[in-house]
Image (cartoon, rainbow, N blue to C red; front, side):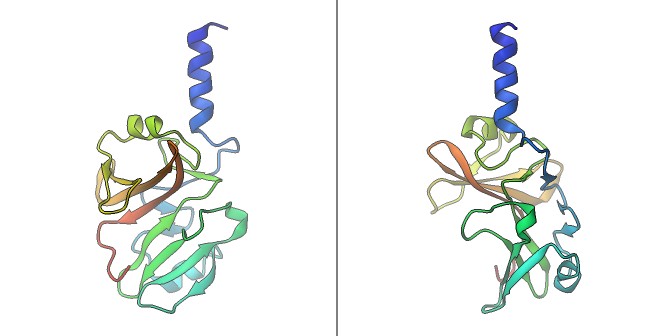
Length: 157
């Protein structure tokens, strides 16, 4: 195997989850979709642990969907439906980005990545061909520690 072939293979292994996982985006994750009414999203069986203590409702994905970053989850605005779906260790974007991906890989996949101010280490980019949606990525020491698909209109969230 040549050095170039080995390098390409190693780069691909750093991006794609081992098990293939579920795809987060461009519309949603499995049976969950941005804009989906909250009651319909609840009926999918993918959501657990509802926190309705504020105007923005927070859910967690079922543990079978993979580990998430603390504070990540699925956010629902009562009027707009689902407005954000967090990624897991088993999910990835259509471009292969997941937890642990390197920052250079994210920048290669999403050249329009811009910082979210005033939050250090957090960036977002439009979802290709979907201007009403964004991917949000958090980095620590050059690796993705959290990622999500979000609506441009987050409502109360």
